[in-house]
Length: 394
Image (cartoon, rainbow, N blue to C red; front, side, top):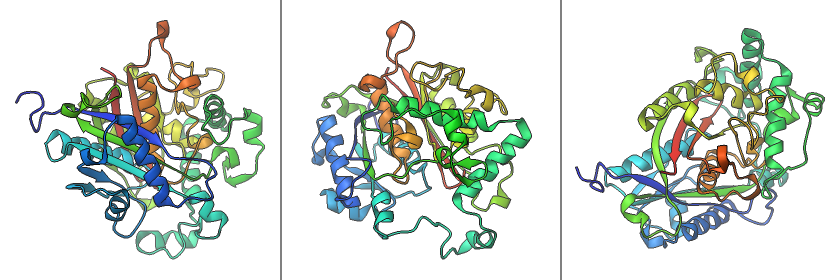
């Protein structure tokens, strides 16, 4: 096959954007979808007519049909895969495969949520176990909230490998340090390990600052075939490799609480990209809880299993903007924004960093060079699913 032929086309991210984020009391989720989508198309310099593929989840009975109609799109390729927070990395993988195969030319991924505003207005509940059916019904009587499930996994890692509360707290402190350089972050005031540890307990061992914030917001990402790149106004960021994996939904079916499905999705993504973890310049990792960051770093291969605690220690500063492996450079879900399924925000931030468009939080490597390789890894449910995407400038 020649370059550009169906089945052999390279795929790039050509447009990314966020909607208004943080505290957005006067918008609907549809409006946030639309705002992010318009901004992503403008970022790419393409019109709606160029979009022939659309992917969305989390809103409406017939998503993505309802959202596509709201956006004025009539796609010939759609995806509504919904696997929790990793949805967007998984969707990006599906979109890249479709574009490479010639089934679509430009696929728009869009998300919007008013989770914070809805809770404040009493339009929704934070209890995901309410009215549970299927596998969840067997755990609900024992009080297994989503947070408690993550807390159980963290406690197992602490027991098995000696991971400490101070090490977990270091993840939150470094995320906040990164957020301080992000004007779009919801919380930017620096915090200390002692402040994390002394906060109110939410689910042992997690205090409030071990847990993600709740915000409103939306994001959009436009992927396109190499044929369209020349028509875009932005520098392309290439999709080099992807991987996806699902693990469990019932906690008793999870083989090992210290191994997340990112171990498999990461292996696949790195293998398909032909790169090694040590070549990666920065990582955007789903961080609904501090333990999530730690164990995903292990499972992606940035350190050995059981060494995540030592890897993320504050004294080493590895996760900060000037560290050895900057992680969640926008402040992550712990400090920047978390409107629900945050996986799409990881892709937006990774692309901005690779383009050199991250402003005061821009990562620079040795000699002041821009990062060349980034990984975005999303986790869904309670370590139920994982999607990993390797992105590159070249």
